[in-house]
Image (cartoon, rainbow, N blue to C red; front, side):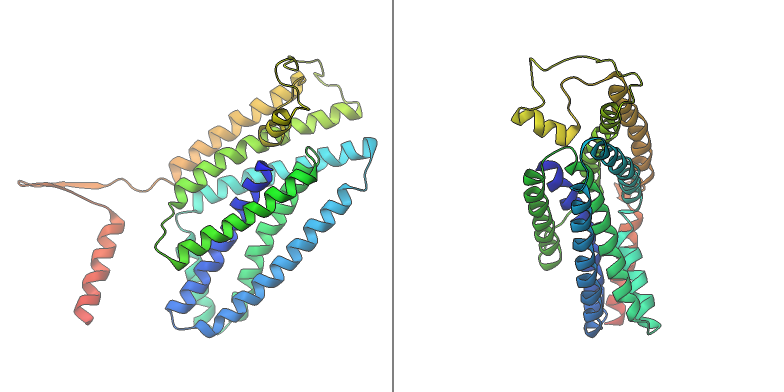
Amino acid sequence: MIAGMLITFREGLEAFLIIGILLGYLRKAGHSACSRYVWAGTVVGVLVSIGLALGFQALAMEFEGQRAAWFEATASGIAVPILSYMVLYMQRHARGLRTQTEAKAELAVTTGQVVALATLAFITVLREGLETAIFLTALMTRVSSGGLMPGAILGLAGSAAIAYAIFASTVQLNLRRFFIVTSVLLIFIAAGLCAHIFMALHEIGFHLLGMTAWSTKSILDSESLLGRLLHAFVGYHDEPTVMEVLAYFGYLGIMGWAFMGAVKASAPPKSVTHNGPRSCVAIRQEDSQELVSAKSRTLKS
C-alpha cells in the first residue's frame, strides 16, 4: 500500500504541478480562454492512462506458473531503468520546472498554436500515467493488488490536494527537497524490483549464484504483515539468494552514486558575499533579479 501510494503521489504531483503552472501562466498572461485546451489535453491524458493501467493489470492476470515468473521479471526489468531515469531527470530539472513550462506556454500562445497547449498537457499526463502504470504493474507482481490499489488512489488524491494547496493558497513547497526525499524512497523500491528480477528468474530455473545468502525467517517471515510491507517497499526477503543480494546492493551503490551527483549538480548557486566596512551582505543571483524587477515595476508605475 505504501509503495503504491508513494509512486502515485510522486508521479501525480509532477503532472499536477505542470498543469497548474500552465493554467497559472495563462491566467496571469490574460489568456484564460486558452485554459480549455489545457483541460482537454489533461482529460484525454487521464483517460488514456487509466486505459493503459487497466490493460497492464489484465495482462498480468493472464499469466500463470513459469509464464507469470517471466512476466514478473520482464515488468520489473522495464520498470527499473524507467524509474531510475525519472529520478535522475527530475532531480536535475526540478528547479527549472516552472521556467521551462511557462516558456513553452508562452511560445504556444504568442505563435497562435494553442493546440500545442493541449498537446503539452496530454503528453505530461500520459507520460506520468504510463510510468505509474508500469511501476504499479511491476509492484503488483510482488504484492496483492488488494493492498496496492487503495494506496495508489490515496497517493493520487494526496498529490491533487497538495497541488491545489500550492496554487490556490500561500502554501510553499521546496520542490528540490521534496524530490530528494521521494527519490531516495523510490531508489529503495527500484532496488527491491532489481532483486525481484533474479527471484523470478530463480523460480524459472536460472540458478546463477542461487545459494541462500542468509535466513531471517525466524526473526521476520516474508509472509507476515510486516514482512509483506517491507517486501513491497524495500524488497525484503527472508531467504534471499546471493544474486538477489548482489543485485539489490549493487543497484543501491550505483544509483546512489549517480543520484548524489545529480543532487550536487542541481544545488542552487552559492551566495556571493560582499564584505564592506560596516556589514556583510549576502546577495543571491535570484534575489538580485527580483530587486531589478521590483525597481522596474516601481519606475513604470
